[in-house]
Length: 66
Image 1 (cartoon, rainbow, N blue to C red):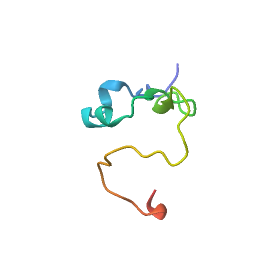
Image 2 (spheres, rainbow, N blue to C red):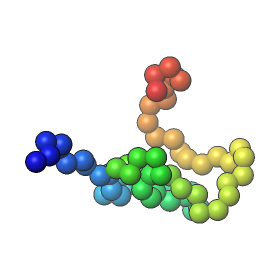
Image 3 (cartoon, rainbow, N blue to C red):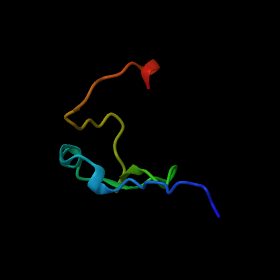
Image 4 (cartoon, one colour):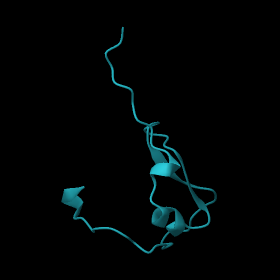
C-alpha cells in the first residue's frame, strides 16, 4: 500500500481566460518538460530576441521575491 497522495495535474481548464487570450499566436501551453504536473510555455516557431507581447496582468515582483 502506498501512502502517497494523488498528484494534481494542471490542465488548460486551470488557466484563466485572459492568460489564454494574451498568448502570442506562436506560443502554446503544453505539459512542462520540467514538471509533468504543470503546464509549460512552448513556442511553435522561433521567437526573435527582444520580441514583446502582453499585456502583462498581475503584480510585478522584485527578483528577490520570486
